[in-house]
Length: 446
Image: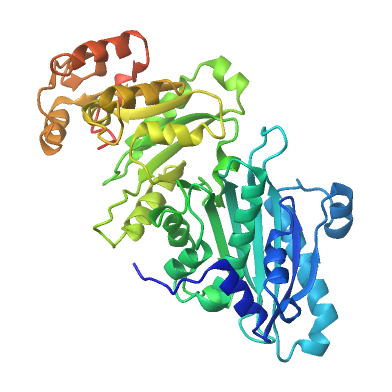
């Protein structure tokens, strides 16, 4: 991957302050005025800061930007961007417009509250010109704050804001460079960018779906979502309080049977689960494995799979992790409803065959992490020749099965040795459930 010259936050803020052509306003709600504070404290702030405002009170914010939207939401952010940009150009355009690249930075953030009970996230936006009098460009981000204290979350927002303003002017040669610069001096343990939208001539030629996937591929998000209607949405909006059916796989080929895995599982969700949630939602799951030896991330291939899967009428989650317990841990941030994985036999075998060498408790810890998260595996049968072929390709050994009418079902599959006792326990406890045999053809997972 391409690298970029790295500067710390102080250097970035000061270099922007010393650039007489960059000038703009700041409007920040919910996590202090941490972005503006960087420019104010490094010196020469009059070279960059036209105005800074923080409309913390909801009524004040409504008066400035209009009501009818949630306080921390994309519509509120866009209203803030529109209002601040219009005012900036009206006040300073006539006197400075010929020599100034204007910008408006805005954010609306829900940082950790006093009791620690809120979803710590926010929307960040930047509207800017690349040349004086030029067209407006937009960068809009959804972020998750992962620090455990309010103070550290505020600090992370401040760093991100400076990085973003610097990146659009000094590090926007490619999506990879831009995202890396926006994440300087941060880590996935501090902040996560799980939705990024760009518009305007500054981003001409950038593919929005590929940029979205790069957030995962380059390690700045645990997962990103592509909704069924082809919108980029943050996971907290898509998954919130939903009863989920997740279908993970490689999806080297895609056909209607993949959709059947989800629809059949959604159809048998217990009524009490649906009643206690905001309804069922089915999603396909893809993984981008992190391989430090391979600098070429197959983003285009991933997006091809996303587009093919969306044609089946369901959205797609793209994860960094391949393990089901990691996927369920992620979605459990946003829903307390049971998570159902709709899988084929070979995915189940991989779950139980994995050595989980990154976990101290190896296989037992991996299985425990999965099933203690209110998870059920609905496992669909396969034709016996497909089962045999995939077992051979995957290098699996020791597993045996019996067929019924040319089909292998989950309760007729058996691992070797002591693992069979654990397997039988999971079956009898109904943590592993048999799927309908109607879709026993060459199943979607592999």
